Image (tube, rainbow, N blue to C red; front, side, top):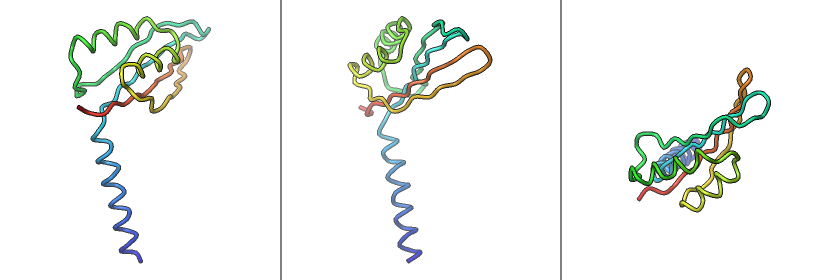
Amino acid sequence: MVIIFSMVCIGMAQTNNANQNKYEFAEAMIRWNGFGKWMTTEIDFGTSVNIADAKREEIQNKVRLMKNGVDIMNYMSEEGWDYVDKGLVYLQNTSWCVYTFRKLKQ
């Protein structure tokens, strides 16, 4: 019984790792000051995402102008990215909302 359970857990872990290796990820971050005023929006593709420099720059420039998460999610969806998660960070008088996206590797 323990051996079967162990084999199932190992199989699940390998499947999760295999699925994760199929995707590239990006994070979009919106920053507000303590009064809720928009400050900046950025998107980070990391160093290993396979995206042409011109396309990366195009996405970064468009996202920098967006002031809310819905616009970012809609735009990234149009670009073929899937929404994964959202997180909120509060530090002193600044708030960040971080949106995570993924796309199948090509």
